[in-house]
Image (cartoon, rainbow, N blue to C red; front, top):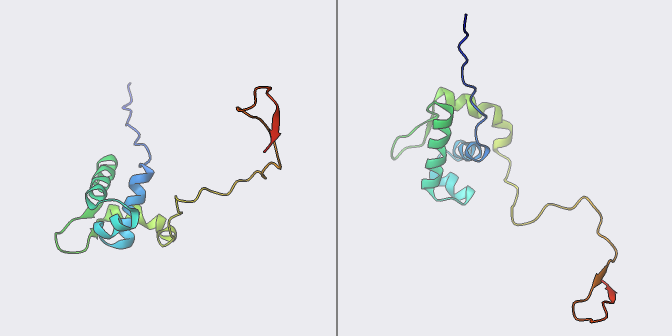
Length: 120
């Protein structure tokens, strides 16, 4: 007796999911694109990719009106509701280092033929 093995869907791509949540938060793809620093067509492609990966329609698109979430879209957005209003972490500043800086270290000076070191 053989058993049919169903394919397991991987978790959604987090970049696509973050784009979806921005669309939900802003209510439009253009506003989500502005928030994320993307062009609107990239947001549309992200949503289409997420829908393709998940195998369901998440958003009903109606030209000239705000987007409407499908039941699947509401189900996906609901668990993330506590995080939707939080601002994005800035990517322009690196995270703080957990290791304290070293007071000094010896480096070999490329200009010195003798190979002496100096504190930096």
